[in-house]
Length: 243
Image 1 (cartoon, one colour):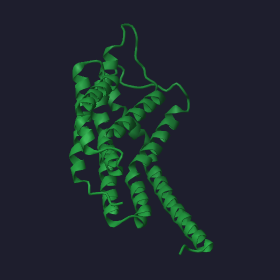
Image 2: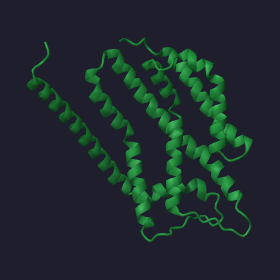
Image 3: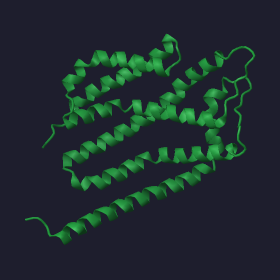
Image 4: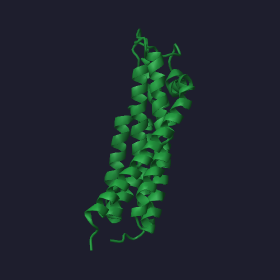
């Protein structure tokens, strides 16, 4: 027999209270990390700007708005706090969902969360240490004679954050593939057959995001292709789904 309406309402209420508690815990942790990072906001921005500063003849960015020197590092500190606390957020999500999952599903979800977090951070590191130097070197070298490149610090933050999140997302390709296979939307054999299209797609992404030279485009395309291959390899270890 189904539970009474009162029991159903009590379960829903308990569900919402637990969800609220976990969100409040997460926001508290974000606030604490943000306050700590705020003390180093200017140093964080300098670190973020280093890949461009190394190539600028004048060695500095500019601020076109009077509040920008304060607001831009403030914004960066908040974004950094969100990024630093991603593992804690995912853990809260896993702990919230775990009671409703089977043991093998909890184990799989935990592994996916760990690997996806690692891949996301790896993608951002790849963007900062590999793509940024190539990209900014190319932009500085192509400045016409008589033009002084003086990027605005606000625009630089927006551009770099977009690129960091794009590459963080690209590195989630193996996780997306595994979830598609696990859910039954795609099969491993189908991904194997789509390998040639994936390689072409990787080089198209390289053409769009990297400077227009073969070396830079290849340096971006090869990791994307390897991530696709990694998704195929990792899918071998997916447990059989139980309906």
